[in-house]
Image (cartoon, rainbow, N blue to C red; front, side, top):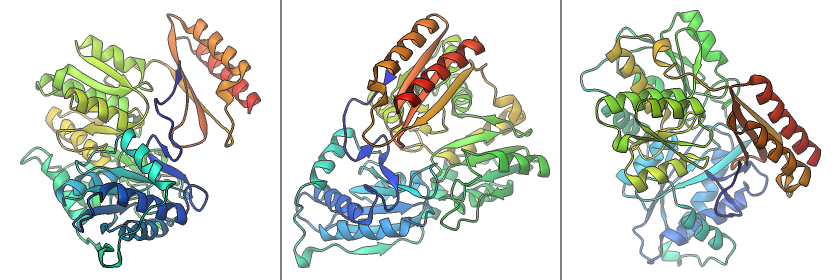
Length: 453
């Protein structure tokens, strides 16, 4: 099937505004306009008591966007609280605890340093709805009336944001439980959690082996983190560690590595947690929420347990929307976003990692025994980059190739073709027990898409 979003947005993708820094739309001028538009949207009564919290990861361009957003927001009368480098889930938490009207995270998540992004959280700590983003988009391109001189907002640095977040994360860990005796590699991707993640693990008693904790503005997600676990795997083997926790640049996703350096993705972590929560009668509605990208093996595991897998469009925001609408409390993505609404408003890699460590202690089993909850169905994902203005999925040859692949996979597997919401990529994903057929259908479509481009 061909995936698509229900709304067409000019600037916002599946996770805020994102692109290459200093290239439209991720320019300082555009950030100022986005800040002013958000300020006008949230300061809609003219009063001076409105607040916004801003966090960022460790990208060099974060300074530029932080300053530009602050200028735009204060120009419309918003008071800005600057958190500095903190994980994305910390922004969701502090937006609520500091009674702010809106939270903003400056990050391009798992992308390279030259990309950046701006994502918004509402006053409830959850990401903004598509409808709210559409209204802000409309304001960006309109003439925004600035605040009168006496009503310009103030900006203030908040120095203890990461400590507040650390205490919140630790408070979700089983009371009295310690990590004594566990040797943990934590790879922070030279990103937003480079200080808080090792601190939390050490405070709970673990022997911590840090990787990716020396950010220089340019090395975020570079050969480290959840998208490249090789450095963490090497550290596990070299140090004889029990487990690895690999975060991405803004620490809202995680990959778990066992004592052999083998990777378990978000699907395996969700399966483990769903099973444990169901056993404890904690899994609301007996339902786990995941996206169309999650492995067919996860779906079969849930069905075998008498539980339900609810699929959404790709993007943790859509997972959370489904969870909130139905009262479900566990969801996430194969890419490592794990959302536990009992504790947090968005994906939290450190939080999920801690709960995996708790499972290790409670079951007295090694990581390798907990990271293979189900047998995966062979899955292949390939990406094809395209240029602005191109629509390769609309080309007849591509359409015919997709239709042919769907026919071949009937009763044998499934196919998902979609445009990335964060990068100019066509993602071609298929699952099938027949590896030869799997490779053929994916390669045939990729060739047609490449030819169309």
